[in-house]
Length: 475
Image (cartoon, rainbow, N blue to C red; front, side):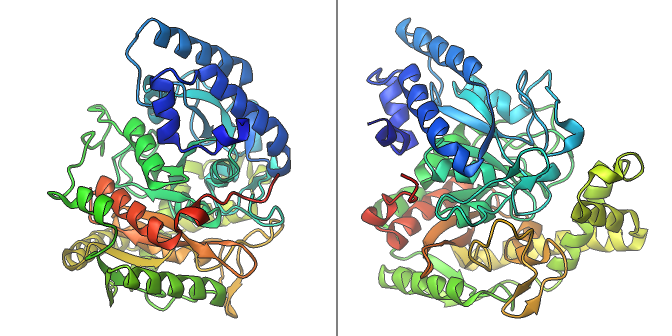
């Protein structure tokens, strides 16, 4: 019965909590019992604040008993990615330099989660400073994929995705620069949304639109619930957008009610000639067939992203040098090699290189905006490969084509990052070995709600009800 609760949709759990058919303490107990039993095999949740969470759940129940106004996440447990500050709970950023760090204040989106009534139960694993789409670090070790514990769950929100897929959490927050929400969502058969920049307020690089926050969940509806709590307008933060984005008239209701009939899809099998592993390509080709049979209007088309790779590499390197450049001098021996490489790439850039990348960034946004006027979504691979062995740091070749750096194999996502548009990964199916594959859907700027609605309709076609109810083989 407890495990049934752990795999109950978050939207249904929220209803049960609001109606007081379920108490926050009962729900927390179910998730904690599952965490104690399953998490040692996955290493997804790396810091557990059980005593604090128990007190928060009790306070939620007391407020409900008094008839207090309940937030949208009242009593729902969540663990926060270990890149985001949580007041009074250890936050390491995956770095030995911060192994004992306990922040005094919450990150902006964590404060919003608390205001919405969520119960913070701990922290999810991340690679060092979130760099890389394989979740491991020298403090906690590697996180494993619930669908096959020999494999990686991706990253950098790998701990979050593994925890949600395994029923340790109803949903989780993630952050996405190159691919870090979409990649682990795809590798764990989940929905993961890279939001429009500014939709969810965050600290750090206030003027940088590349890194964003987003929800990871087992369904689009659950992701939408979490997004409703994390989004918010803070007039003191640059790039912070208003709290709601209105969908096009009747569009959201249409995809919810009628499935994908009439959905205009631009389909790109390789997003501009990228190598895609044969098994991933096979699953995605089958997904296209299923969407077409369900009435989607699909055309082979893609925007011009020829300069997106160089633009991303330069802008990412600038960010890495700005954030971590001082550590090269003071703590080089405590940084992983790939991070050192990325920082040094940024420090070596010239003014003209940065200026060109900034200009191209704006041009790429404009091209995607124009392209999507003719389509509801662009569909492309989320990840070019299936989950790979957890001992392998990054993908060095795809179909025999070398991937020279630790971020080259992420281009199916990083090319979309540069466009500035929201993108969501939805479960597309499984390889012959039972490993998840994701389909990436890119929507119009600022239409995150509409994109999640479309994602829900697409997911219902690609994984009908019996398949969606299958959970990882952990018990």
